Image 1 (tube, rainbow, N blue to C red):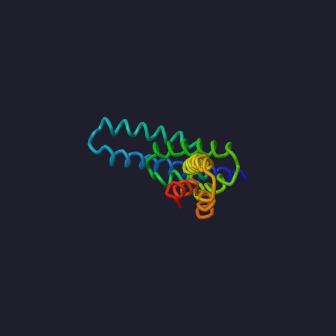
Image 2 (image 1 turned 90 degrees about the horizontal axis):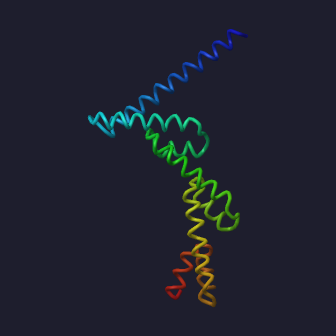
Image 3 (image 1 turned 180 degrees about the vertical axis):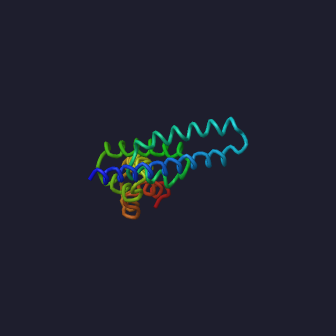
Length: 159
């Protein structure tokens, strides 16, 4: 039993060392590509990327994975993406759960910044559309449904 635990710990330690070596290589590769022979900027980049990488290790889940896919070995941008997406996810979660929220969720699925933007824009356009009345508004709403920016454009263009 003790032998199995020791082997498990050894395997995990080797795996962590491999990951650490790979991420260190990623940091140095990224900074070398970014700054070439500018040693001062290269050193600064390595420090910033390493710091971002350490902070990223506290994050997991779909947002981190998506941001990592989007930004690759640029750990500063991955961290920025995670922070922005998480803040937008919180805004979306605390907002109304209505047809607009459902529409934007369907359009943008796991991009919370775009869902947040979509909801703000649609609510603003809906508010402007509600200032109109009559047959033209009804016609444009039938034609464009929940795409309130298009409903508004349709009304402004006279159908």
